[in-house]
Length: 461
Image (cartoon, rainbow, N blue to C red; front, side, top):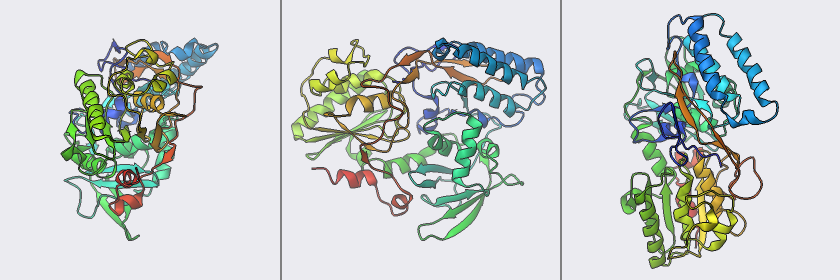
């Protein structure tokens, strides 16, 4: 489906099977640069104190020209509708605007397509970006804090966020929706990763008049407290080790990274009860393929009856990562994915490779499972196939991808534009991809130190 297949370089066409969704880069601990998929990160005057109308018009026209390559505009009447909308945006830039307002206009241009792969974003390694010494994570029933090494002692991992400077999380979600002017499926999750940034909180009106932030928190016992936090420099490692520890504690089996076989974007472990394969990115490499082959050999050696593929934090990339799995699964998996384009041309042509696994396949997914990862989850699950476990992905099973990336000439705003429409891997298009077995991670789980994934694994035969 919507495969984010950029090559990571601006002003270049994405190779068909490379890249990942840019906002997913905010969630990868190992990254050295933070890619932020929300133009509201630019503060007032970020591009220029008093931009000229000519510069504004030039920037917008450049972006409009690139957006006109979007395949949505090949539909009857859509090009005329977009051109009319673009003219209305140009009309709002006929006087000098603050930098953040300009970027908001460019964001709305991209958002017109309601395509999660067509968006503006920027690297947040600029000196004008400030960050709170605390991270956030959006669970199934609320927003919680995640401690960093610099967090005040009064902030604990798992404290429910009641309000940020008087604004509730649900209201923040609504304001972000209005600001983004789109229906991004993972908006809440994206927002949680971006909330530490001063410009995000300024945009949603969640900063005190003196420039600080008041966090109203609720602890495990139900007591509430308010902690005032100051902004500081952007941390060198985005989302830092604090978020990694949080994800490892509540989203994967405890100890997996110590016990399992680990690569740069995958970790796997096999017991006599199940084989567990964690895939953070859909990167097609020789090392990944070798890891999947070794995984299935270990599954066969241990006679494990169950295989679990964890895509909860996978933001996509190369859809052909499915081939390594289809090689070791019965023919019914390949035949069910007759639409699925692979390195062999179609899924049905993927050769079988011993050992073939005939047991039960489960795929863990969440609101952060995106693009090629969503495609992979859909390809391996359904009637007579594997079972989806977790929460709904929210992304349609058919949509756009294969992005090209650009940077505007005057305000230097990075953005990307989809070039190809992808049908669903099988069956009719669906508005989302729901989990067949619900496995929500709740605030109570975190406050009580419960790992829902481990708890669920304990129920497997």
